[in-house]
Length: 356
Image 1 (tube, rainbow, N blue to C red):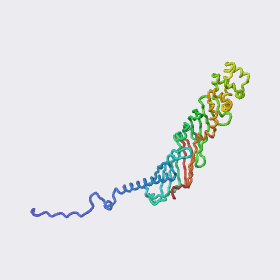
Image 2 (tube, helix red, strand yellow):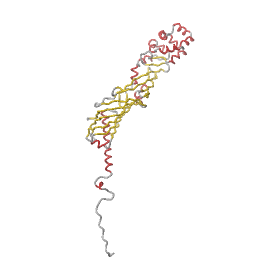
Image 3 (cartoon, rainbow, N blue to C red):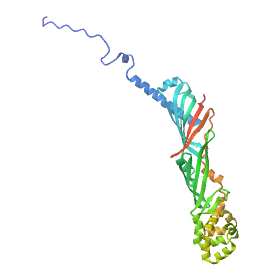
Image 4 (cartoon, rainbow, N blue to C red):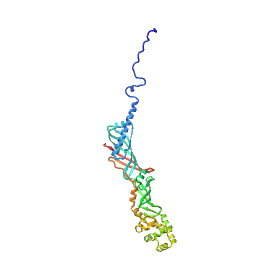
């Protein structure tokens, strides 16, 4: 070819897809599409959980919206089928009689929805539900703590109560135990026992009508009579007390005129046993001044006599009952006392929420 002649041009390549693209991208898909689907599913899920929480708060008259978590993926597919694999709900601070349940956690399984979409869920049916109820000691100490009593675990079914109880202007040391048991299908009952109020190391009050109950000197309080002649003479000066102590009149006359005889009499084991058996509440009715000489406020016996077993037990009661649902059943099972409180297994069936 003559170098002076111009070189012929190559034909341009046929139009086609750009390098690095694919036929799916060309058709409107692409790697971003699955991500957008997951994001949309996530937003729909969050919206539905929020809506469910608000609905439960209103329908159950809760003080705060519960935490709702819908299980299973993808959510929109479950919604289209109007069936959810599981829904977990955690409700804090549920009022139950005199106490508050720290937390009620439950999971509903195989939930059937009455819905047209994530924005129009009208209700749901719950064929099966299980969970736990917690009555925490921290809440009990706060709610029943006007008497400055604390509750701690004593065993798998027992709770120990320790603290102080104000009575007639005095802070008395309180001791009691509560046995926890299920009461029916939806309730928890407490049987209060071992109740006692200590007035320092001088006397102890046990509520009840038995001879061993009432207000009695402690063994130390009775032993102190040997060293404190004024208290001993105060007791021996009351004929009704002498009859209960079983002390002969001649021995009393000798003891009242001779401190040595007095110490001998009050120092005997028999006198100490009889002194401990005296119910000081009965003594106070006719001889309030004797109580004062023993170091006790005469107002205490009257105030203590009003603290009957039922009254004191009611102050320490941890009983509660779950409300009955409008439809279906809720049952409590497997009551147990653990370190942080009383835990109860929860079961339910045939429940519904909303208009379904």
